[in-house]
Image (cartoon, rainbow, N blue to C red; front, side):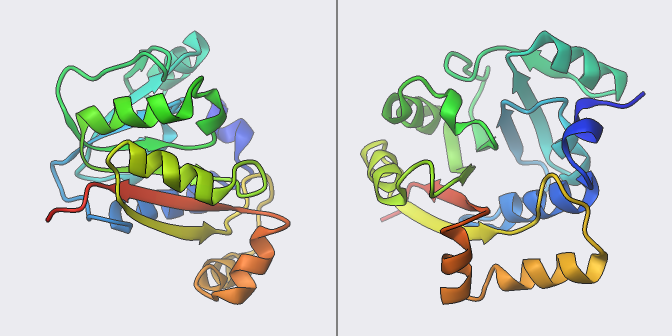
Length: 195
């Protein structure tokens, strides 16, 4: 059965694998046994790339819950604006869904209250000014911040060498920033710095 992940991502394996790598590595690292909350998770396809991480997916679309079940994944049916986990999580992820937050500063404050290590999300700099988002994160108490370009395309399958070159270009500094003016997103990790 073809699921949402199969329909939405032209080549889901490199896309979701690279996203998972950045979730684990950006900001304070995640380790085996840590709990990750994935808000607006779709059918939970990211879980397959987070070996050793306790995965909790949440999506507002009941069809996503059904599709997750068809792949042997369990996700919770809830709106990202209202959901609170039963206990704190090490990390919260939010991809391709920041625009669902009804009140971004309030959303960041709520997530910061139950997230112990970091919040990781994607940011389209042509949709939201990074400085505004950074100010909202700092107001929520998340004063540690790193942003990394993410150049793996969602809607195009690329030959492996081209995909590898794009991932390498994420670290190219000025060239990456220039590319972000026209296409692609950042992956942002935000956390409370320990003093």
